[in-house]
Length: 68
Image (cartoon, rainbow, N blue to C red; front, side, top):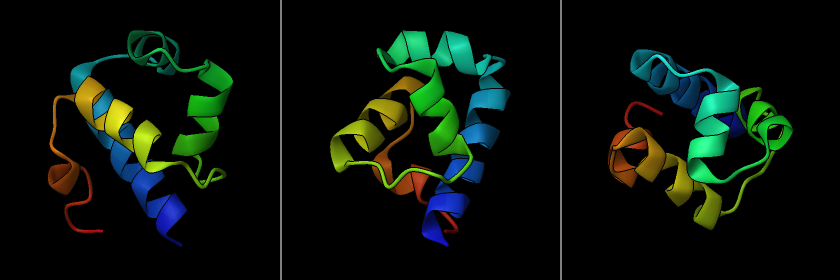
């Protein structure tokens, strides 16, 4: 399912930055529990929140979805 794939991709990129879920969620202005559910593939997130995450990860939207 795409929500699982994007969650895995987000987690990989966040881990490469060396940030915890809590620190990253705070950085992008998102609730940690909401963000955690995104990484677990339990949320069908809006494009607005996907853009926040991509910006926080310093990647383009196309890079975020690379290989998905």
